Length: 435
Image 1 (spheres, one colour):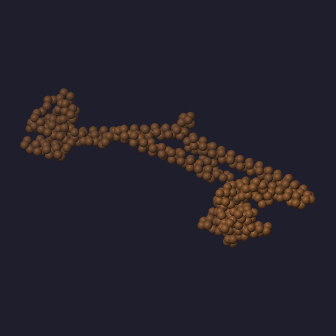
Image 2 (image 1 turned 180 degrees about the vertical axis):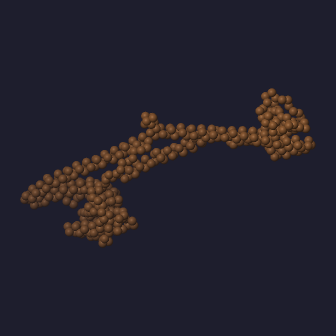
Image 3 (image 1 turned 135 degrees about the vertical axis):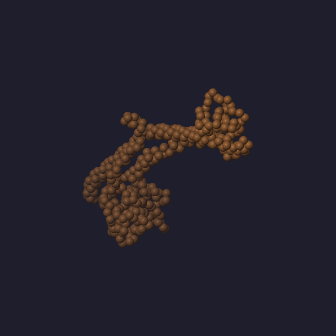
């Protein structure tokens, strides 16, 4: 049984074949039951109702005077259209093959009556001789029964209804539930922490897909972790030679050359730190906690102001929000750093937008064309189309890091035009936990 189950019953094709077989059996049972009930109905009507009516009517005609029988038979024809009774000239001779129903009529009619079956009559016709010698004929006409159930059209319709019903129920239970689980698992897959594996149940094909999905998720997680560890090790190892080069550059007599080398080393350190930050963002490296978002934004503005940039804050004095403070601080700082690179005045705004919190970083720089706004959110895409990098050029990671942080908080990062010129980088966060 286990072998047959593994080869046939556990597969979708096997289950569909079983459902079709069950539907066929159900159809045959229903048809057989319908035919049996219809046959019993016809038989009972023919053997009980018609004979009883004929016996009663024959007694009624026999009790009437001979002159009154003709009008009485006309009234009977109108009242009982399924019973045909007429007067006859003489009693037919006995039939060698007597109908078994004749004995029933003789017992019910009583003494003085004789019954016989007219030969070669269709439908069967009964002859009744009354006590006064008169003769009646009565046709045994069965009453119409229910419509037959075994016609080809009825069988086809019944087969379709039962098959579609069974297959629909099976598909709902065996396919929709696992597929919905696949969609939820794929949609909720992230690198923030451990997620329960997708249950492996249902037909064999569905279980195979669930196993493949779980293995793929483990491989993706391992690949990302290995990449992060590798680049983290490279970034850590880069710090040592960069530090040595900075120390050695201090002994260079040419001040202009020393400044160029130090700027190049700063760029190398910034590139290393930015790549590591991009890899870390979107993964929960710290726990979410309640922070004063307004104070955090004011601190970022003060830090850039201390470096000589015109950065101001506008918004409420205090707004409590549940977030990862280090990640959110880094995201907003990246946006402000991009703004001060290309603009002379930068403003950080905090406001509510219905059920969400909105952080906007506005600058008065040249802005970004609409055709490039979406591309600028990708990693390593820079606003400066030049291939060379100077001290003002970035590495194309600021926006991508900010977007990864916003998404890890359940929010979004979008870019908009500022009037009359400039750029607005807008982070929208869900207001759950905000006060």
